[in-house]
Length: 281
Image 1 (cartoon, one colour):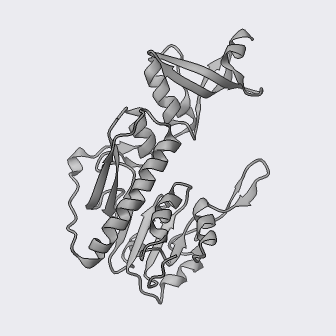
Image 2 (image 1 turned 90 degrees about the vertical axis):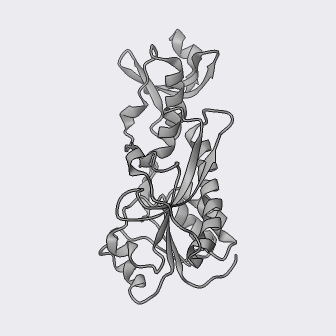
Image 3 (image 1 turned 180 degrees about the vertical axis):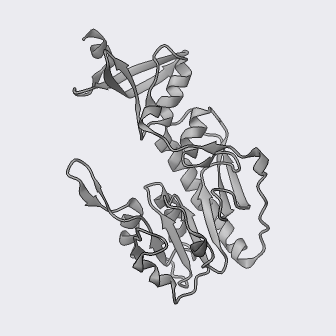
């Protein structure tokens, strides 16, 4: 791992945030400190589980803090008597307060998996799939106090093939690309040779927090719309329908010749089975 001055801190939490860290790891911009969310109970046994970013940090020997509250947590004392050049935020999961944004000398950069100002908010990848965008992308912005609102430093457009991808696959593509773009941006940005571009806020669109009910599909509805839902809600909440008032989760499907073809399902209270077998029940 390339050594660097202790001046960059990284805020991130989920699996795909580690793809940005992978891009930074062997550069002069590998963070000296990683901030992620606290361990949470997961699984049937509710075992306390570290975030993927924390696991990455431990594997790569980088100090980590896990503040519960970004204004009052004692772990944040690490910033009190130190100087920082730059903060990087990539799917941290919490809003940084104004006092945190103002700490580093060069502010905070954010990696966002859409071509801003379109698809601001919490579910940009799922929303791009749902809207059948075809041309997607990633942005690096300088953060301000509003969500996904700051000036744009760089963007990259991507045309995934085949389309539509499932969310996890598109996550991998966009966050990997975001990490590479970030490594190109940082040196010019810190040197002061990069001029940020103001977003055209009149073109902004917004995404919402997903709910479990978003995955509900109507088998009599447009087949391609159902397939887009299946791809977009691949990881969570999944797609499902009801039969005889019982919830049936779709676990495998494809779109062929204009038809949404369900291959495997998990009926409520039962094990996964072929859809053909379910239909015969």
